[in-house]
Length: 174
Image (cartoon, rainbow, N blue to C red; front, top):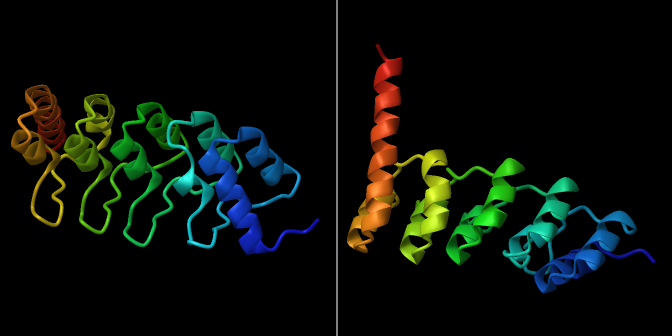
């Protein structure tokens, strides 16, 4: 049976959203559906998958899914994983080339989202990989957001990473 591209995208994204690994595998391998085929809402399977399902993320990425795909608001799967607190999925995305320094339409990086949502383990993972001096469209860095939410542990973590990034930059300029 040959699936139309839209039907194929709908089937693949539905299977990924429900967390049906075997169905996602079947659609990718038997029907040879490209993992970035979009559904009727212009979303890929990686964008709608169960964020906590690292097996589906790995399968899609191993079959060539774009780890940096953005929706119309500039949101990437890394933003979604950071928002929902799935650090293991975020690790998989980064392992497959996802940038944690892509801003969404509000200028937020995934670390901004993780700070706002209070996912300290995600912030800890993102801090050494993120541009901590990046400001969102309101002029806030991740550290500013952490200070505003009174998250002392996250503030200290981000201050430490910013200091070490400055030390590395100054040693390279000498």
